[in-house]
Image: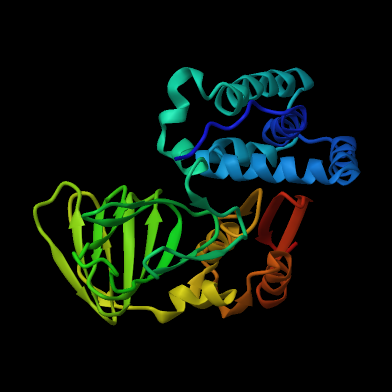
Length: 326
């Protein structure tokens, strides 16, 4: 069982203050320099900043309207300070007052306190007591619930690649993946499950064996065979399509793109790095292909700037915008 996390430390509070600065609408040059000095002063500062970034992603605390305003110049000092005060109050409420206000009961906070989770850019492999192998992708979280009648993995967020093992118990226990949209029961298989919160969908890719999908609010059940993939929501399962073996390339540390829109490609890259990665709508429709090593997302962005007529602007390592070349 998970235990409550301690109250916010002074270092975490400093990191939160810097997050307020970067979300406020205007960042001065001296503030960028001061932030870099603070970040480099102590490894604890880097760890605290990474925690705040990861928490913000899991809580979905980077509203696009704020993100877009950061790039706009000309805000008055009074307006900037007023916006910072509002953001500070909001972030302190969410990050510091979690026990109060019931935030600890939200799905996002449950993910933060999961049995197993990964940070942005991190991947993890583990073996369950019955021999089932799990590989967690970036920014993923899950709980494991084994009982006398069922083996369950509760996917709270992100993506997991599962290779099920035969149940060692004399009494067979089904292996089920529970997601916000419904359940996926394995039928002796290797399969990939990913939650898409922005679409309220779950995607399933079956590489070996078969699975049975059970949307949460629909009576229908869909059987998916090896070599098939499908999206499903709480209400329904959609038409199966051929599986994409490259969707699991992240397990090998790779991102494989085959004629992807740049906007979609950068959204995928953003999963593997802390902070904000924006794509200007003017270049979002450009097409990109290639195989990219995930251990260095800065190198990926440099490759993009060399392959396409775009420029990568880094306000800080944690705030990056890709736009048309000047």
